[in-house]
Length: 544
Image 1 (cartoon, rainbow, N blue to C red):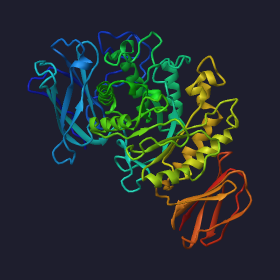
Image 2: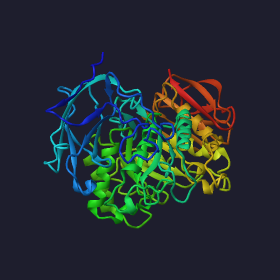
Image 3: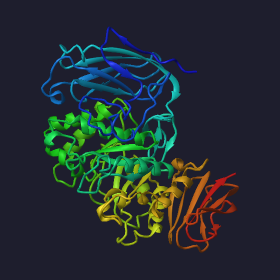
């Protein structure tokens, strides 16, 4: 049973509220310019059905307020904060979340109710004489069900038991299956072909259907802009934010989130924003959290945040601490470094997002990294799939990397296709081609995601990882469940399964042909003979 939504003002408030973010097809500001958030623009990229009769848990709430005072530079001069009081008895502590300026005299507050019951929200403004922003109060009734549209299992966190893996707030395990969309939250960056709204929609749809659940994208860098010249900051001045540009990013982020794709929002390619003053950086972090923390996202530095030579450990830690302290939901934060295996402030990040530019990654790298640092490891970028690079025009290379990484103790793997990321270095150099989203390499990702998502396969419990040589690997939970993976060599071999007892049974899967390949039953012993039906097969064995 859910509660009817309560959307009442307390104490004579003047703000307007919505139980969902504004419809991407409706005007949100007098400065609206016929793009993603204008009724006269293209089809809504994140069309919203409007307020629901009952507010679900994790369904974003937006409150719009109108400043009554004039502020010369609202982004710099004014801070708006919402104090949220969760329902009595929910166990959720009271918290604060920043508001953000959205152009003209419009300010917004976005937050996510995570518990059933009645929430109250009160505002405080650094200019207490602005009665439109200061001292506003609201109450909301929230039902008991999770929002199927926005966050069916809640937000992402670290597994409370298996600390090397991720889980959702409701305890659902989460295997990071990612894709790199570095600059595609904008139309133009890095002098690449335009990434249109239709292109973004099509690629998001394809990735969701293929079993991906993460898109990694840069929410701000100094080359990202829109085809009409709009950019995140006016004239690249870090003290003059441009809400129009951020409204357009909102629409792309929410479209992906509503396709059940977590958006990992990274800040500043090459770490160029670290050249700003600390106060300027802090304002950017506050703005990012205010706009996006109510959605299913994570935050980070990069891509290749250390490449510009303007950062350093103190700046990285300031970023991590700022994001954590500003965000009441404590979204996960990681740092994406330049070179293979570089770990930026590994003790401070929530998880290790490490790029490995190799077509033959060590199967044990994930287990080694995660267990050494006691936190999840994600292979966050690999050698890109594109014609002309050694081995990368062969889908078997993606197959080799993905299965090794995801069975080898990692919490996730992020695939990259050069046609999606940098078309000028791909088979389609002059334009973005949606065929890249559905080619043979993407099909390899679909297969591994589907197989690892099968019922009863508990990869997050695995505690055995062994490289058996010749492209053969063993993963599993001792005494309960094992996965044996075979690449090119299909000759018979022996494995030690003496930590189990009785009979082990399961089924081979033919990776190359995406087909079941025969049932197996073997007695547990120190020398179990494994006879693969052919190359590129994987066997799941369960103790009876």
